[in-house]
Amino acid sequence: MISENLGENQTEKIPLKGRTLKELSEIMITLGEKPFRAKQIYHGLYVNRYETWDQFTTFSKIFKEKLEELCSLTHLQVVKQLKSVDGTQKFTFTSESGNGKEFEAVWIPSGDGGRKTICISSQIGCTLNCKFCATAKLEFQGNLKAHEIVDQILQVEKIVGDKATNVVFMGMGEPLHNYFNVIRAASIFHDPDALNLGAKRITISTSGVVNGIRRFIENKEPYNFAISLNHPDPKGRLQIMDIEEKFSLPELLQADQSILRES
Image (cartoon, rainbow, N blue to C red):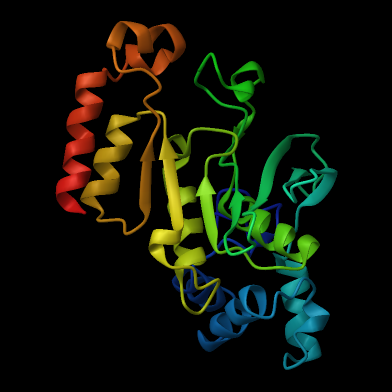
């Protein structure tokens, strides 16, 4: 069988969620199929929101059996759901493999219902130790894969029966410590042939990972960017955010100015 990374682990199926259209095309070619199959799968996953191969009714039985054998449409499992009187809902997810690792997403509707935001996680736990953050008290258990990030949106929207107008990477974890999976997921959210969210309706937050900010600028990523300062003085910031030891506030502000110049 073919792994998610096409060769690293030949015992696992390839998860097709969280793949860009280009990546899906490459996978189809690897499987000996025509590239147009990728667009059919992409549309089925993100527009029709299919969750099983049986829902792809235009596919032949033989092709569906091949996909079932080699690929997966894995989806997250809801462990817990909490709802506030203001309509906010918090979801605790775990992967379909049932590995026990849990992470969260939050549905946040505005009072007038015009703005509907989903706050999503990028990691299970966090490597940083921000004193004000509950996630810092948890054991870091790894980066979320792109399909686990994307599926937070798909599952939350399915459960609440509505579509988000905005997505923010402000849940568990430091997004820039999982840069490539975060950007891959954001590109799917933004793609008109997928979730079709405007780039400025997608916000990627950071506690101040300067090398990640520079990469974001160099790659000319179109998304909104938020930096968590929390204190105007380096010494004061160090007391509540250990990232100040690696990336100083002056260095962070310099990177911030670079973003402003590029925007």
